[in-house]
Image 1 (tube, rainbow over the protein chains, first blue to last red):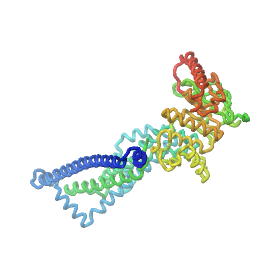
Image 2 (image 1 turned 60 degrees about the horizontal axis):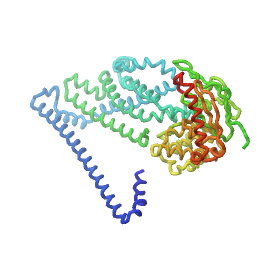
Image 3 (image 1 turned 90 degrees about the horizontal axis):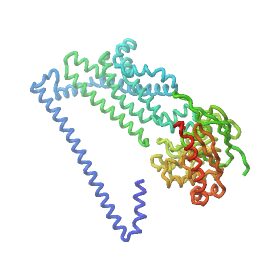
Image 4 (image 1 turned 90 degrees about the vertical axis):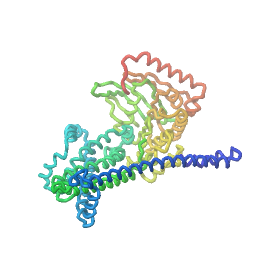
Length: 295
Length: 268
């Protein structure tokens, strides 16, 4: 559209107006001037936002540091930033933190990927067999409103203390809500699209593959993003309960030995790793749904 | 032209059943459509126009009576019958060509030859450079042309047109009427058009069927004289006999409104 306007203007306008080249040039200059001013304005706002964010962070960290060092707050309970950084630096240098990070990240990734896949598969089953969806509807409602981490002890008894039960706790947090979200999306798809393929004699499988699944793709990907956050809850709670390795374990261990510097520095690691993971999934989402725009 | 019946409706009756009850949508409809004929169905809302079209397409079986295509009973949607909807419903994640070829894909006919035919169709319908574009890059009129290409790609014998022009601007609508009329005549396709627009019905059809409602039945038929039916829709609207036909249809429908408004609304 834009391309056509650009080239079209050249051919149509210039021959009509005498001295058109000059006018054309002047107009183009004026337009790019306006555009530049607009961009400048936008950059200014962005710069202001970023510097405010940085200042807020500095004030917070600075106050914390000052409060901790001057005993305005109990440094044993609340620690302070430089102490936490030292702790982090030490554990990173001697390599003792990496197995914990690796374990937690693995559990989280397995949790949100499996959670999304299983949830989608269940949603597909409910869509395929409407009878099933009516049968399971009340059970899903109950399961969805229940705090699933409460099932933790049952998983530990059933699956043993370790990786399996942590993943199971994570799945219990992610699967139900994924199933409900994606199934609802399946049902919301405009019947016109379904009619189009049915009129060509499409089978139910073809209908699913050609319409239902691709039309729900953006919702599935955004559910994946939501599940990153949910999986962290499941994993940390699971590690609180049983683990011998992982960031959740470090937190509960630090708490038990009254080492709050360890607790808070583990929280910082979680915040950093969770943010990175979320950003990666968000980037994946943008890549996969590029060109997919709903009308 | 040799008269040969392609579509036949025999004592067609359909009842919609839902929680609220059972409602009779159409009753005892008999109709024959010859090969190459263009027939329009007009009538007030609730007269079952869309029901008739859905039954012709085989979307669901009639409660009573038969739909025959070339003498065989229609038992489900098939590639012999093409259907064009009011909206284009192009899939936003498929390119124009993939959209136009979806019927071929469903029927396992997405061959080199099939795709070549899709290209030809897109070109004939004035969309030669759009094959790789996506629906959201096209205007409403262009998208509806892609929908026509999609319908024609499986080479159906019969086309069912369910108000395909009603969502378009007047200017685009008139252009598209001409294009569809010309394309269908050239390919020798049989067509059944459902429309609210009486002028459109007169301009495009060989025959206009007026339906009455509560329940839907055929109230009268209007054969369009050669002079108008052979002209393109755009030209037909300017011919001297056009206004008279339009007014006859109008009176016909008015009569229905006066007599049958008591039972209240029912969806088609």
